Image (cartoon, rainbow, N blue to C red; front, side, top):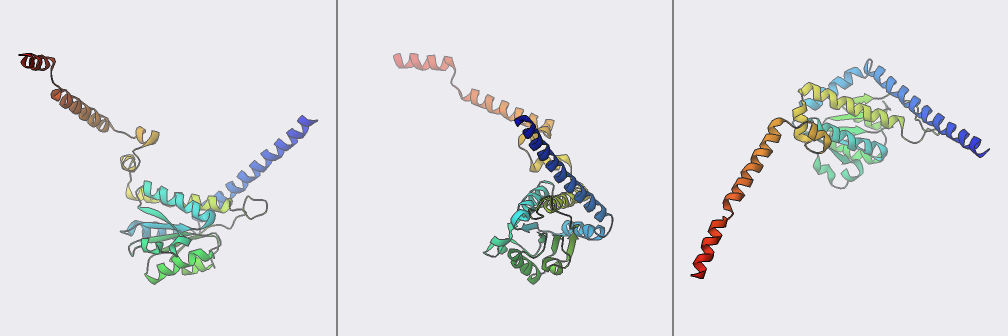
Amino acid sequence: MIKAALSVIEDGVLESAKRTLGTERRALEALERALGGGLADPFQRAVETISGITGRVIVTGVGKSGHIAVKIAATLASTGTPAFFVHAAEANHGDLGMIGPSDVVLALSKGGESAEIRGIVSYARRFSIPLIAVTCSEKSSLASASDIILLMPNEAEACPHGLAPTTSTLMQLAMGDALAIALLEKRGFTARDFHVFHPGGKLGASLRHVADVMHGAIAYRWWREERLSRRPSRHSHASTSVALES
């Protein structure tokens, strides 16, 4: 009887997982369809705007959108697009000084009404810094203030209460990846370029070139020979000993 009860619980857990993945898969499919429709032009303009700046992409957001923004900034930076994350709340307490006139702001907010994000939006408008919004609400304050709106489908969250950001953050993440790869390909960013920014770990090791390895080997041989040349020989030790005894 206990085994039967556990089986029912396990079945329920697996069904929950399948529902979540199904909900999120459908959201990504909707996002893909949007890129074949109304999202196509704003996406292309976003890529052109970012590739045309001389500064960096300032990715911002709060809450779960903020966590996704951190990852997007890291992906952009490692694929040839200088970028970093600025927390929208911290921006209101001095971090606005990290944003320059040659930068572009990429702001993430599902509803587009986060109070913390208003400061960075106002700053971007005041100094004519390009502002790109990633949101599900076309009529939000963020969308209204933006130069480019990357409008995501307003799909249901996987959370059964419709509250926990799940589907929406997955679409934000996918949008960030799509931007990063489009920019990478537009710039002709190569595996060798990637290695410059990612020399560590297994990934970095897989991208090492023969020249890198040979340079290290030659440097080691030079160091070893130089060290041996400075080491006193056994004969010199013996000569010193005889001299002292005499």
